[in-house]
Image (cartoon, rainbow, N blue to C red; front, side, top):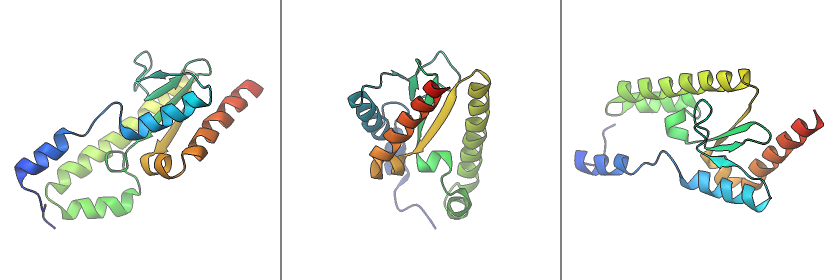
Length: 143
């Protein structure tokens, strides 16, 4: 399987992938704000700079894109290996996944609750994601 785009087209495409303020982050943040949940975005005071940090309750929220964070990894890995630069991408994504686990463990040791939402879950079930955050807040309040 080869890339249908030229190197210049692929470079332009990859150049526009954002690390902050992605579409999925923005829609989740707006929904939380509308529920009265206040947060900090890209909070650099804790490991991993979570996309959303609800500091009052020590909740770190990460909005993960399916490709770069390895959603359905067994299937995706086989597909990626068939493509151009497959070994590079598999190594990169597996490093991302390992870093995510290390970051989560570090945050948990610091007393933070860590939530991850896949991009497709935010897009398809935004209310469910907001409810999960609200339930987590209620669990923390209940002690």
